[in-house]
Amino acid sequence: MPSPEAALRNISAVVITGGSSGIGKSFIELCSRLRPDIAFCNLSRRKPDIAVGQLKLRHVPCDLSDSAQVERAVAEVREFLSVDAPTGGILLINNSGFGIYGRFPEPGPAQQVEMLDVNVRAVVQMTAALLPVIKSRGGAILTVASTAAFQPTPFLSTYGATKAFVLNWSLALNEELRGSGVRTLAVCPGPTSTDFFQRAGLKEGAVPSMFGETSEKVVLASLRALAKGKSMVVSGWKNKLMTAFVSQFPKPLVARLAGLALGHFRMKQVKK
Image (cartoon, rainbow, N blue to C red; front, side, top):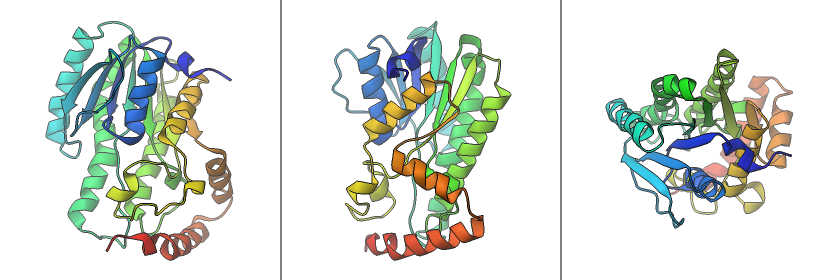
């Protein structure tokens, strides 16, 4: 099995969205330990609080739901690449995203549209803006999708649809880039120990620990998959079984079963 270090062998710069917490923060922490010489550029509202010695990190404050802010941030990223890491491969990690639990359009149309902006538009906008320089220097584009991408997800309908877009878009882009020196990887974690569920409106502990995994395990699986040249990875054996299972049945049936499961269990966990 390839080591995580192999994924970073030719990388001199990592550009990441949402590196202030959760999976994004774990990407910065692990990659910086494996390769202390890599330069990082993070785009998020908050600056990451990371205690890693001699971390080369530039933080660009950015609300990814605002396309104008993303455009301005991309200009700073280009400057970062030319000054802090002028040569070597680039790893773009499209990590930012959030979900909302409830009956559509709860808690309101504005929040639903914001989710589309962060989970879909910002991913496409960032990748389109940086793809020319990644092509010129080599590298990879890693986008965090979800196991929710494999089936309709009642009570988190918009979130699941955004992740289905991200998964299929990443796989298609990988084929378009074949032979260019740039690859894409869609990462599909299941429930993960992050702030995701609290922001989605669920009580703390809404997902039992036996069904979840840590963000560190997701990052390790991602880097190993990148080193192996994969275009998609589902992290965790339980998640692999689940996605393989739901793929065997008609989507209307899967939607019905998912609606029963999510409605019975998780809707009871929504904050009041």
